[in-house]
Image 1 (tube, one colour):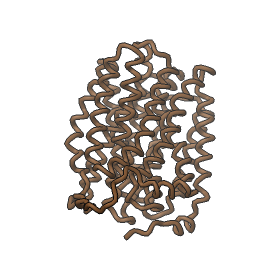
Image 2 (cartoon, rainbow, N blue to C red; image 1 turned 60 degrees about the horizontal axis):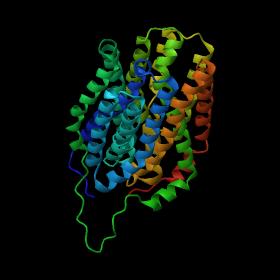
Image 3 (cartoon, rainbow, N blue to C red; image 1 turned 30 degrees about the horizontal axis):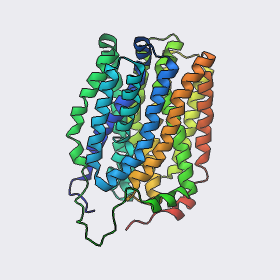
Image 4 (cartoon, helix red, strand yellow; image 1 turned 180 degrees about the horizontal axis):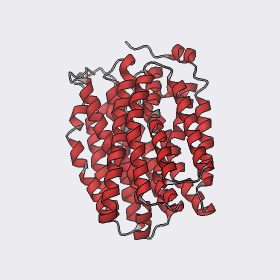
Length: 405
């Protein structure tokens, strides 16, 4: 494939805004769980399961969508994903039963998110930058997801109390129109014409995938990203429940998620800059260890709005900072040719973690009447994720580094 003449920073800009839509909508919808539960008569645990399945489908679709993007082009897959995403929001908003809400929220949004999120966008960005600038570019593009989380959470905080969750879903669906025009900027370069004697195109490069699966480093990165998914789903889906349990105003939940998104804009750009200069697994160790300490703070201190804002500010710096480092590490190990599908598989591990972070946390709340068990599990998983990055020493990563032509 020949490279596009488009300035690569325009690709970063477009990719960041696509992620602002994809992640902003997705990460703010959990704030509406109490209203949806009351309006449709669905229990919190059943709603948690719906969001959990959404996360699981998102993860399952990611490697397939990445591979399809490598074969048929990034823009086509992003367009299909955005349309499915919008359709899911509309179906969920108009649902008169828990079944139809599940179809829209879990299935259509899950598939749409899987085709519009990090593996697709970051692969398009990563291919356009040399290794010594790549992690910074990935970090800036990833910041779009955080910007979207901030803007959509703030927007939801103003819209939902007056218009209700149904109108909020429909307005979010309408914002799909804003990103459709950006997809063209992520179009791949012109593909050379196939000759009759060329080997048939395959969706997956199974040889590359098999090589990655055998790598201990790839396995450890996937395990660490599982924990990241657990944390993000738990916090985004259950922040409103935690706030209500603590007797705080509902606006504290939307403000907290907005603070996380705002602070992570700075966090992912800084970590992208740092990842081009220092050892990526070492930085991941620090991020996960700090997450564990923050979650322990919620367990050991009385939860007030000030404490949640402090938690959100620091957690925001760490929130999606794992994304440019993990995707950058995968590119470091295996190159960028199959980055969309290889990072998509790592993303599947992330979303398996998100499945449990969403559903299991809801179940434990119904079983025990508090979020303490889920918080303890989150803290322990954070320290486990920190530990799994220790075997990936700088010397080991340098030995395994993919040598780009």
